Amino acid sequence: MRTQFFYVGLLGAIAGGLVGTAGCDDITAGQSADSSAPPQLVHVMIQDARYLFGFPNRASALDILDNNNTRTCQITDAQAGLDTCINEFLVDQVAPDVACQESTGTCKDPLKIPATGVPVPLSCVLVGIQAPDNRDPGGGIQVRLVFDKVLDSALEMVTMDPTKAPGTTNTYVLEPGLIELDDQDGNVVASKMYLDNGGSPEFSSDLELVPLGPALVIKPTDSLLAATTYTVKILKPGDLKDRQGNAAVALGGGALATSYTFKTEDLTPDVAGAVGGGLDYPDFSDPTAPPTITPNEVIQIGFFELPAGDSATVTVTGPTGAAPVVAYSERLDDPTMCSKFMAGADPSFIPILDITAATTNDLATAMPAEWTAGDYMIHVSVKDITGRSAAFEADYAFTVDPAGETTDPMMDPNIQSAHRLPAECQM
Image (cartoon, rainbow, N blue to C red; front, top):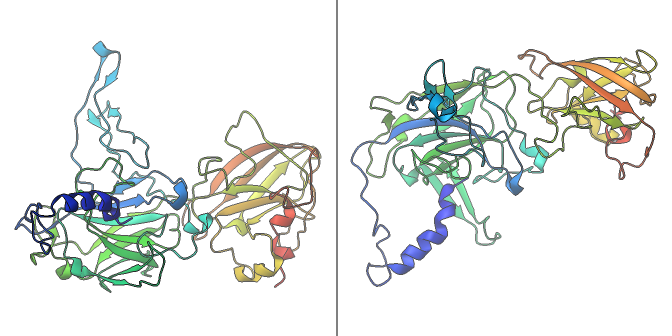
């Protein structure tokens, strides 16, 4: 988000206190003068953005430059295992893991990209944000190129439409062709981009609520893919200047690099309940307490990235032995809308794998059937939609009980009529 918005009230109070002591045209009174040194790129952050309405995310903030100071530490026996590492900030109001690594004698760096890759948060679409604005699309990953001093505001054009509602009057357009995010095939990732001249390049109480800045921000409007290498590009490094016209440089001086890469994680499941409980059904988060479903309900397993659901394999053992069951990508409830998914292709925006009892194991012809009452065990194997990551595999236990079964999707959104099979689609 544009962090300067948080300081409007404070700045207004300060400005009011200065009335009578400074000329009306002097908007820099009380500010320290800019350093004559050129602005340095100090971080390239890949991090979650705060979702609108407080929708949770992955609580992830990572730095491609990996230039954070290494802190030595020890665990003292005299103080009953006291860890001398301390948290310096929060990420989405969660304290990151900075535990002392006994093997190296250093504190764990929460900004270092893990070997598993960059976590991908949920798509904006899942929280009903179809048309994000260019200040804050409201969720998803953001790339922040953080500098150690304020950049020239001429990098961004601001236009105002007084006919719009308060808070939506301004439109911000970053200089075209200045920066971009590309996927590993060289395609530009559709994104909202803006200049955020607020914030500190070193300190933050919370890296999402008060992110590091000043920064150029790239916010993809679609979810990133699993196991995919992305490249942050600075296409016009010579245009990046401070308010005195000093050209930006790399940390420590020297020319800016024109590209920075990162790779996303493999296909990763949403843990039931961790993101509001809206993706998974039933709740498999406690493996010691198998959940219960009714005979006409659909199992739904949510992921942070897009699964190739129609290519998933499921093996089932139940009260009558093997039973016809199919797995497929979520298609919602309207059979007339299935054509948007294209024949033979996976849906393009819903990261949910559906599993249901069917008349046959052939997905092309399978129609809904009911689970027989009793205890089940299923094994699921599914890859991401690009096929780049290793298959996700897991076992799930559950019980089918006809008590409380309904055919009304308003009473139970998990019944089969709310999750159409591919063969039910009217192409």
